[in-house]
Image (cartoon, rainbow, N blue to C red):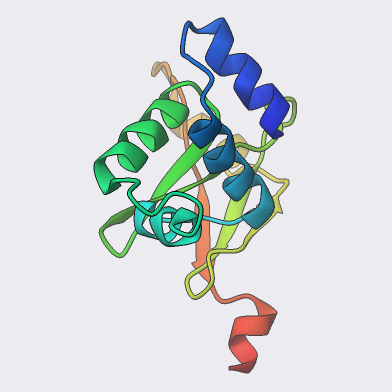
Length: 138
């Protein structure tokens, strides 16, 4: 998802466009990795020195609810990233050091389908954690 698409989703759902929201979205689009609310606060403090942690977290939660951001939990803390294309089903490898992601094109649910006979699955999430090549060097 890009910033223009994200702003469109906000407006279509009755939420106001603000410059701060746009900058927050640009920050995620530029970084293309999982970030914490604290990462966002640090990244935007030069532009918005008084931007509160609560304001950031409320917007991140809203963006997740609207499908603009994806979320995962690492080290007991919620991390967010700009949503990938909704056209293609996939999962992620997530670097535990830098938060970079790599798409996993295959889905393990296909192999598990037979184990859920009679169940109705509403959704699933599959993530693999480790270290990217750059972080392994350090």
